[in-house]
Amino acid sequence: MIRFFLKSAKDTAVGELVALEKEDLRHAKVLRLREGERVELLNGAGSFLRGVFLKDMEKGGVQIESSGSAPKEIPEIILAVGLTQGGTFETIVRQAVELGVGVVVPLKSDHAGAGVDGKRAASKHERWERIVDEGCKQSGNYWRTRVLPLQRPEEFLKEVAAAPLPGDSAESKSPTADVVHIVAALNEDAAGWRKNDFQGAKKIIVWVGPEGDFSKEEYRLLKGAGARFISLGKTVLRVETACVAAVAGVRTVLQ
Image (cartoon, rainbow, N blue to C red):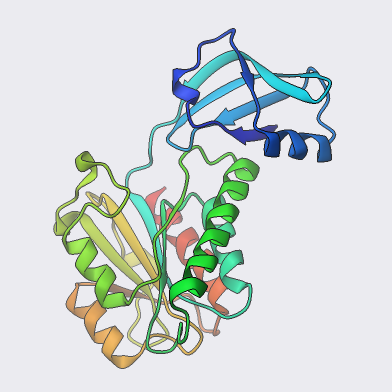
């Protein structure tokens, strides 16, 4: 099913004709969307509309047939990952959206992110936001993944302690005891998934280091925050592979 974003989806009545934005119309043309095909409109906050596509010359819209909503997943999965080089982080963001990650936190760690500041950081963030939109429409993720600004691990730990996170509602504030930190670790002391239980957690923060891993000081900070160190296997994974493996591991335990 083809999907588009509509900010006011929850305020639109069944039977109403909703006009699509020019960018969405261009996208519909590229996809060769035909009149009468079923379309879904998302608002990024759990609400959605379903209907059929109608076109008239250069204009087009969706005749709404039904509406609904999807509950937000609890616990929410947050992926905090060291910034990678090239376009790899774009892949990480896209895969995080497909896996239903609630928040992606790009980290400027001791071994990553040097020289990424100011306009360059803002440009990257805008690109990641566009990828989130594309990923939500492709995967049918009704809750739009948020990408926080690039920050140091210690800065993010302070934000977690002073929850809610940027973009959270006041009701989503979680005590520190309701937050579980999981670190995909390369050290020999890392445990397996079977020893983990996330019962009672409202947020699970999955930490994945950059190429070169987290530094000793960063590991010390995470240990001080009560993090659990998890092994992803005997082989060394690429950062993007480790992100998928770690999030999938959390989801397996939750099931």
